[in-house]
Image (cartoon, rainbow, N blue to C red; front, side, top):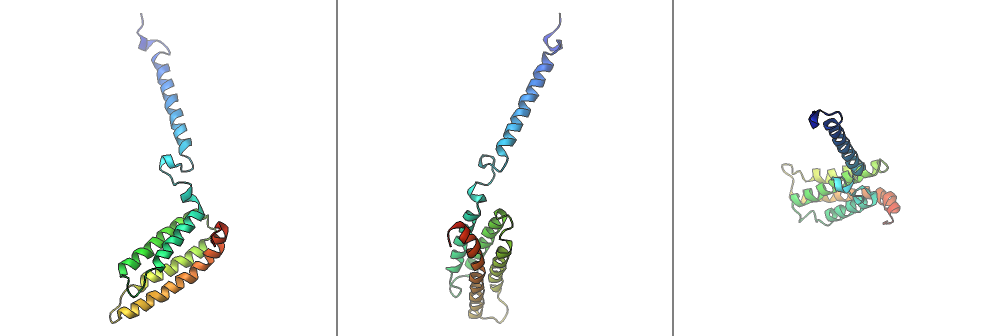
Length: 157
């Protein structure tokens, strides 16, 4: 009399079926998660939309531009400029290189705002505020090409 474990196909067949079920489960999970599905921790469709990201950049820039360089602290300006940089990163990630030149120009002017905050010896707070104000004017000018191209494409111009 043979034991069930030694019968051909008994235990071995169960193991094969178990592996097939696991493989099928893994394949279905991979299929469900392909393309960055939200349920699998990927970005939401809105996060992948250049128009949504453009609106987020516009909001971050509005926050930066609302700051008065003569009264805002360096930390406030740096924080707002940093948020613009984060939003630019996200826009650049979803825009498929279509707006890289305009994003790079805007990024460099926002960096100039951050750099203008560096207080050198002998520079008065008024001079720093003037440098920040000039850098913010350059940001507005650098924003225009994105407004023209992406703002027009998104219908928010």
